[in-house]
Length: 294
Image (cartoon, rainbow, N blue to C red; front, top):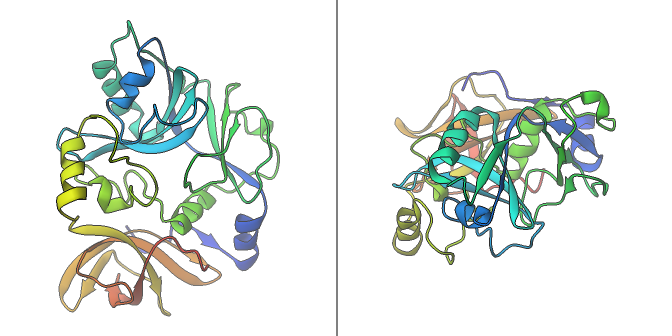
C-alpha cells in the first residue's frame, strides 16, 4: 500500500454512492458449469453451501487449498442444476486451471465465458428489476449483481455509470475483503470475515480445506482479523500498523470520504476494538466492520 488513497469521495459523491443507483463494471473471470454433477462439483470445492440455496440464489464464498488458505473468492449464481462462477479478474487463470483439474467434464462441463459476459455491481438502494439483475441471498458490497451476456460495451449500461473507484469505496464501507488486498496466499477465511459475510457454512459436507476451517471454528481462533481504521486528523503515509514499536498489522485498503480517512487492516487479535494505533504514521482508532455509521 502507498500513501495514495484507493478512492476519494466528496460529500456529494458519498451521498450518491449511498442513496442513488449507479452501475460499475467489475473486471471478472466468468465461468459456467453444466451437467449432471455440476452443483456437486462446485459443492466439493466451495466454502458456501450451493445445494442448500434456492435454484436462483447468488452467494459468496471461497475456493481453498487443502490447508485451508484462500486461493480466490468467488460468487456463485445457481441457475437450476447449472451455475455461474464469478471470480476476480486477477484470478481468471488460476480458477480456469482449478476447474480443469477438479471438475470431470463428463458430468460437469465448464465453459469460460469471460470474453462475452460482463459483470457489474449495482450500487445504491432499491435496484431495478431486469434481465440478469440478481439480488444476493446474503450480505454483499452491492445491492445487486448484473450479468450481461451481450459483451462489455459500456453504452449498453443505463446511466449513470459509477466511477471505478466507487467499487473500492463500497467494498471498504461494507468491510469486504478483496483478492490481492486483504486476501493473499496465506489468508484463512476466518481472518477476513467469511463468517460475518455468510461466506462459509460449517454444517455442510466435505470440501477442499474444510478440516482447517472447521478446526479453527470449533476449537480455536484466528491470530489476525480484518478490522476498520478511522484516522483522527492526519492521513497515512505508510502501511504498517504499530502499537508502540510492535507491528500488529498492515493497511490493505484506505480512502477519503468527505475529507475523513477510513481503512481496513488485518490486525493481531490482541488489538482491542477502540484502541488507538499508529497506522501508516498517523493515529487511528480501531473499529469493527462494516462502517455502518458513515
